[in-house]
Length: 306
Image (cartoon, rainbow, N blue to C red; front, side, top):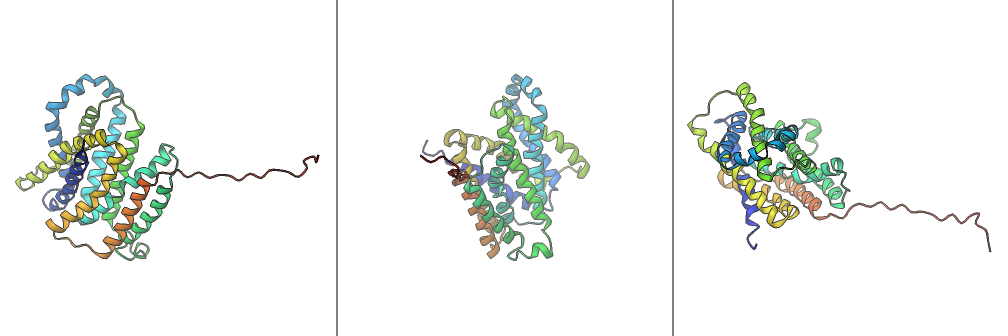
């Protein structure tokens, strides 16, 4: 299909828009309220289409409930909530750059948890990304990390990227025998089991009218539509080719942040963020495994002579 790339491309554009929504929600909607309300909207939209399918697969849903709940906790609760808390102090550009680390973290965790063989891209890309990350976190001066520590917003984004990377790895490791949509719908419902008490304890106030369009964007295109676009991309392009499109997320987010929020790119954004993205690309493209060959010496001493 010639236009298959439009599916993951559109998904990344929607995710980039969600970073803008995260910033616009500051002062209007609490992170707990936004995280909870987006999945409520998604559940309402998806239930008429997926409830019957989930009911047919209820036996497998019950059997895999604890794993399903863990996936929901990582990918839909912690990942999103950490990101929304980060938006309280970071710009959308920085959020996009930090989320760009997710593919590299996924590769690293796959080596550890899935026992996948390390690749040269993972090793070289990891070193370059870490160097770029120190420039970005230190805002151009890596020594600040030792004198002033890491800004809390960056800590939230590192946790956000790490939890989503772990989610991706476990999603690959755990075979629950569910269709893609039932797997996703089950996670949506499980996420509400976690987020509802959290929202009631932390916030508990009903969102006002100013937050409606923010909730609708986070709930409909971001939570309900983008998973379908991503799954279509995987079906048409394959998982590896589709994953490369994640590298567009920081670029798209920065473009929207500059045009919509008036944010400015600084030298440390360009240098640190650029090095981080180069490292991520290397990890995805250089897939030759690292093979350590041991040199063996032939023992000739003591061999009988003819």
